[in-house]
Length: 243
Ligand SMILES: O=C(O)[C@H](O)[C@@H](O)[C@H](O)[C@H](O)COP(=O)(O)O
Image (cartoon, rainbow, N blue to C red):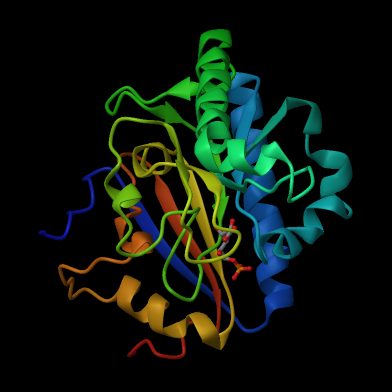
């Protein structure tokens, strides 16, 4: 498979912070600025979150001045992926149903909700891709280069019709999850990829290298159609990059 070329209108930035604390300060300002832009332009801000360490990195948004200045009433928050964890006992039929179809149902439900939000005008549509265009996706990456619940070598990375899909065999526990697909991630206006720590240096190096191989990591498949992609990293995460 040939490496996809970045779309002409997409922009990529690599920000490297001396300390995670400084990354958190910059990420809060970046998020608050994008929030103000879309609140003014569209009257709504659609923000996508991943799980993991990203949530801790966002902590400064809930402190002064942003706690007061961000117009939270305009925010619509979505999850790029979610773990489908049973709310019921292991021995019940719930698990059987969950394994069989509930996790798929959850993905379809989520997609239906997104379509409703497009109709309401809360969520924009990309003019070129035919997929929803979130204002901001705040994402993390695993040491294996996975983003959302899109894992290296898994067939789901090739999904090109659905907005949301389900996975029953995630290599990272728990195995059952629902996730946005690449066309949805790549139709975003802004993506912040927040990655810290030495454990992710190998995947960061592969992703940022100009030499593209056929075995692309999921993070390398995050190529925006028409948007700005910014890496928020620390020194440890970029320690394998050549100057
Ligand atoms: O469930 C998940 O796996 C997450 O939603 C995933 O997308 C996460 O962002 C990365 O795995 C990075 O996680 P860490 O930042 O905790 O390493």
